[in-house]
Length: 149
Image 1 (tube, one colour):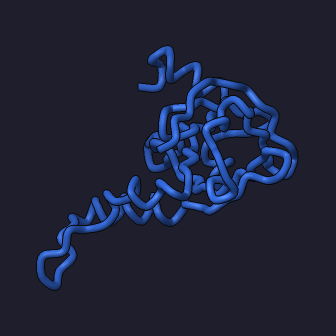
Image 2 (tube, rainbow, N blue to C red):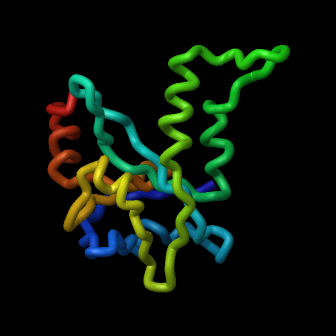
């Protein structure tokens, strides 16, 4: 199990690539740990539209266990999830992208996720144990001040 920690602000280049600090990723040991999933973070709903607070980077080796909540516990022929649970699983799984850390220590943030999270020019990277979160720096400060509630 990985243990990501630390907080850093990094530039996002015009292609959407962001360099991840060596300190943040120092727990990665081998090539197999260079594959990740970029997932939507918590949504913010305002009226009829929604945005993302942040993006979540999850090691490929731990993604399937983490996403277990999207899989129903089948009892018979019917999907036991409620309509809202199915909708949430679709929202989450529909936007997940597999990415690889390149030789320069960068990830490319998918444009649709980058736009939804408002990440442009720079990103705040926050280690949260199992995950690395990618934030718009201003949104992160608002969230930490309790203004995002």
